[in-house]
Amino acid sequence: MEQTRGGDFNCGGGGGGSSRKNDETIVIGALSRFDALPEDCISMVISHTSPRDACVVASVSKTIKSAAQSDLVWETFLPPEYSSQPANYSSKKEFYLSLANDSVLIDDGKKSFWLEKSSGKKCYMLSAMDLTITWGDSPAYWQWINVPESKFEKVAELRNVCWFEVRGKISCGMLSKGTHYSVYVVFKRAYNRSHGFDYAPVEGGVGFVGKEATKTLVFLESSSTGSADDSRSGYSGISHVAVTRAFRMRRPWMRVPRGEEVEVDKENGRNVEEPKERGDGWSEVEIGKFYINNGDSDDEIEISIMETQMGHWKSGLIIQGIEIRPEKTRN
Image (cartoon, rainbow, N blue to C red; front, side, top):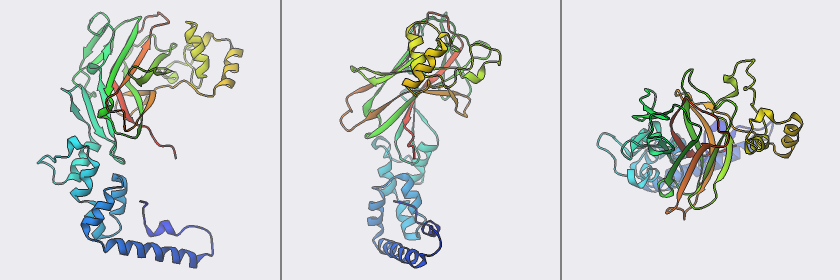
């Protein structure tokens, strides 16, 4: 259902005024007939759209606004497990918006859950406490700390390891059906203590348990963090194939001969992902995607982040968790 403000119909060049007038008459007539339906019928129709559409159509008339804001509509946008409205909310819409505007902790505080506001799709973050971290229970290699800007009680700080491996799982039944999801690792670097991630990528893996995962290489340190004369910086935009080849040969990407790098750039236009600032004090980098269809409820998605091939020491990475949210639609 598209927004029906008068200005949206007034498009095109000069002339054609009669055509635009006829179009407006047809639309207004259709809206008038829709407006004349019983409010419950209008609510039922709107409930088959989306939260965004319900908010847009509410501007059409007072009758449609009342129908669009009804509990009948907003109950359909809430997940079944959240259909019971808490007493401190005046309406299902208010409850929905609270889940869209702020996450809630679940599973004994090990996961956070929220809704994508425009679609009502489910989103999650698996906290570091909910992940399997190799050597994570050894204080010599990892430590568990409190960070004020984290939504969880504790986050994991890497002290020093050669073998970097983090894994997590989520049940497909917890996710929204018919949805393309993107997976991100959410982290920050410990001030003046981060080392070993500036020139070596990590391997991200995402896939269904029991099936081959889709692998990708990402950097956990942005090229912009290096100094102007730092030979380890400046890898922004380098070919994914070049990094993959160097990584498998157990050598940093910058040792790849320039001619080889140019050659593989022609083979594959895909670049290695770099982290981006989130605006909440953390960074994120996408490590994979997956799709949930209607028959995947009994399956699990397994996620991994690892660097075990280069054999160098790594330290100073603070992991808040792994975030799973609907893939952004490209217009």
